[in-house]
Length: 213
Image (cartoon, rainbow, N blue to C red; front, side):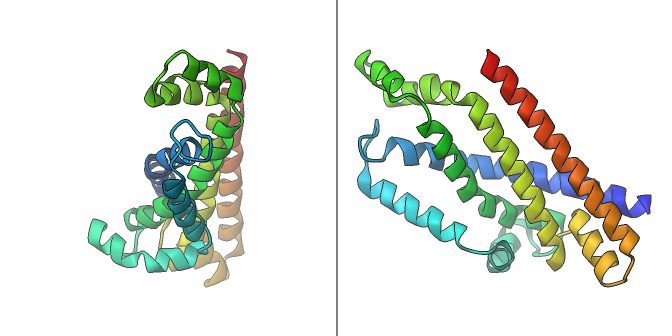
């Protein structure tokens, strides 16, 4: 059984790592823009804010399996194929990016507005407020946001196994469901649970340490 689970675990880690990286690259700037362009924001742009909200809400309304199928042509264009572990990174990243944007937005909005107003009064520019006030002040919360994102992507990657995405989800479905090897499915699920618990533990510890600092 180890010859099935270990390669599948490595595939899942590979998918989750790069999907998290790309979803943060896409979602983090969107989350910041949502905060700074809102009404009374430090860079108020109501129209841009409305467009961003519309795009994020539209993407979040798609069930992941449907979104993955719709993004097959994009995976084909970027990766050269639509099935497999690497091809799955494209829809995983795009599906997670709107979630990232919302959790980042939520964390940044928790910052005391008095700190931002003081920074503006001292003549700080918008980039300075973003990188020297917003991000540092919300860092413990942002670490938890990244942790939650990773866990969500693990869940997405498991669902991707239903349509040839590879990883632990693929093993659980292919052997547990189609071949009635319940023991393989149970082990795959247990490994996913351990992976999630481990990531949550590390995220919580890191956030607590940053909060104390």
